[in-house]
Image 1 (cartoon, rainbow, N blue to C red):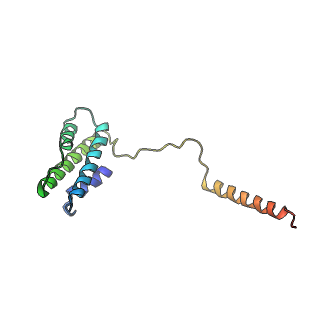
Image 2: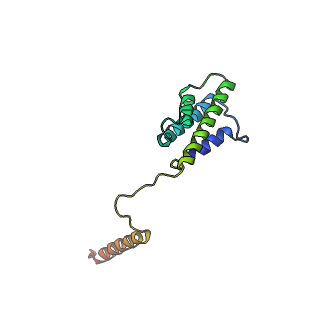
Image 3: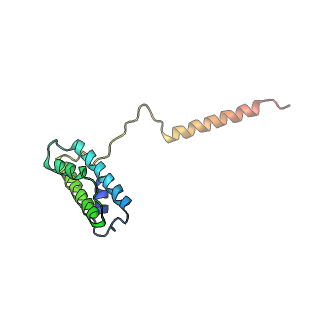
Length: 131
């Protein structure tokens, strides 16, 4: 989903153009990262992957208009690659699942444990003789 959001930032007609060269560099860096991650799940040798990698390998040109044109080309290549990967199985669209190592107690079990510990401390404090 992050790839689609970044592409929308660039290609959406209502999104403003990046104002500074650092904004263009940041968006280009993010799009290149998306191409890299999508390339891992795309079939090797797919024309969409090769085209996106070719566009991503070029540097951001100097100048206001050329840099924005490059950014649009990079976003378009990312969008096409994303659509290709999504059509082939959607592996890039799902979030990676985290597997917990070991048992995780439920919240009520934690609350009960804290209450029992606090109650034990209260009993211990009450049983200590006062001087």
